[in-house]
Amino acid sequence: MKRSKINILSIICIGLLLFSFTILFYSCSCGCGVNSSSDVPLNILIKSNDFIISKTGNIFFEKYITAEFAQIKYEPPYYKMVYRFFMPEKPFVDGLIKFSVDSLGNVDNSHEISGIPDFKNNPESCSFFIDERNAIRLAKNFGLEKGIIDWKIGILWDSTLNRYVWHILSTFSQSGDTSNYKGNGKELIIDPGNGKILAVNFWHIP
Image 1 (spheres, rainbow, N blue to C red):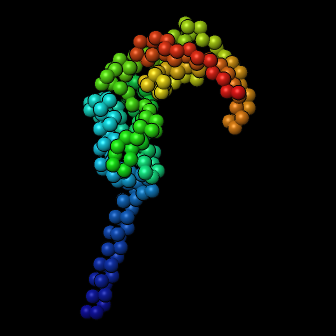
Image 2: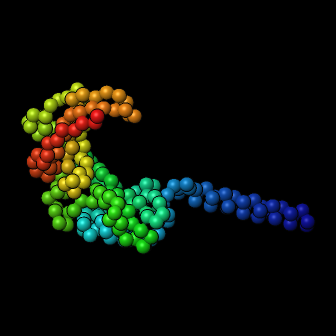
Image 3: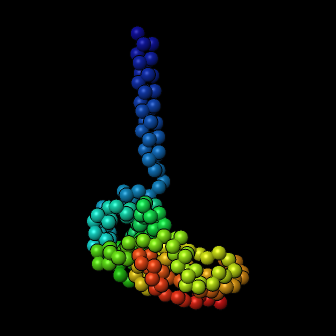
């Protein structure tokens, strides 16, 4: 009789241990050690979402913009908010939205606010009809010099124009490595909606 009770207790203990390990395993498999939405207070997330929605509209936000929780950082007294702006049907449109909010969720205008497409007020700036192939064609037609290396091409946020643009960089000369790089060349800024040349600049890193 005693042996039977001991066996039952052993089975129960083993069962509890297996249950505990199972819970621990599945909780860790869902992202142990990785930032998640629980790391950002709900009021901060809601207000940050609303700030973006005020410029993009809710439908645009829900379709193309997601919080990058792994990149969001809390640097007291500010939360450095990061979102991804990505259009699956136009995969060349892939950028980051960045801004800072305080502990109450208020946007801090003393820090840079970048990457938020102003779809509500300027929907044409978010049309992105010009793909990379056509951006290259426009640059060639314009006469952008070939340079000594391949052009650097991408849809980037332009803080001066406050919008996304095609940025094509031609390099005329370069030397050094990452720590002491020197070079010069020309950059072409193209409207991704209608293909208009928005700016031509010479760049120089002495």
